[in-house]
Figure 1 (cartoon, rainbow, N blue to C red):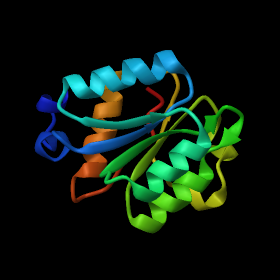
Figure 2: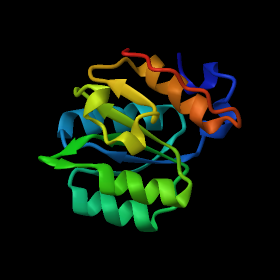
Figure 3: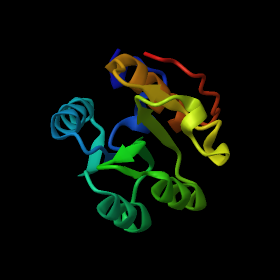
Figure 4: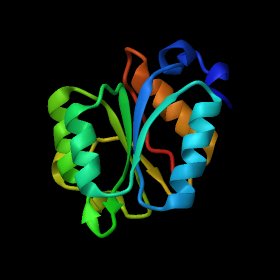
Length: 137
């Protein structure tokens, strides 16, 4: 599935999306896939400090957050985004139980995930009705 295949395609096309991912190859591949489908990639941020700055200052509609950036939890970035009302998706190899209780209902993709699942969850977050279910990929 591409962005153009999903009913919320227009909401994702040209949407600025923050990508916080510390694995270079994953960040590069994710960025290229998103850009190929019209999403504007902000970042990627591979370090927590850069992700915090971008979360505070960048004009973004959505964020994709690796739960652990170089050994540091991404939760300060999630707090900033939540305060700004910007939806986000955790990308992780960790269990949901490892999240702070505040983020227990946050959409989560378990690595490795497939691109069609990512697009579906992003589109659901971009649409007015926000009902995103867990999907391990």
